[in-house]
Image (cartoon, rainbow, N blue to C red):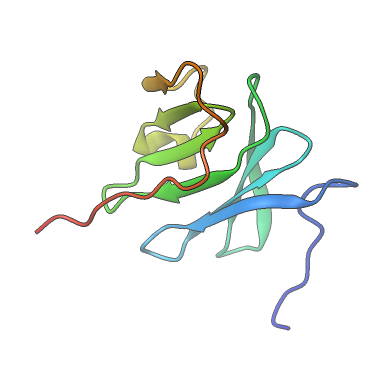
Amino acid sequence: YLVKTLCHKGAPITSMAVDNTGQYMVTGGADRRVKVWDLRHYKHSLTYHTTSGVPSSMDISQRGILGIGHAGQATFWSPDALRTKLQEPYMYHRMKGCSPVETLRFRPFE
């Protein structure tokens, strides 16, 4: 291992994403927390809490938008969410009567 770290104390990691630059990693845990890690220093930088369920899938777009799928809902955070603490996502989509989101992925653009 280059680095071995305990990302979510006492809770398993349920999803993970790394941005295209390799500077930031985002982890989601069974503790309903989403943590942003600065890979340049191997340190935890920000924590967000999900209210509707455990993060089951996440991805970071080419433009830095963080998408998190959890409990029949997808939330999208602006690119600033990786660098500074934001109060709320800029967009969310609820799918009523659906099971938890299994996979959330962004499509590449040209």
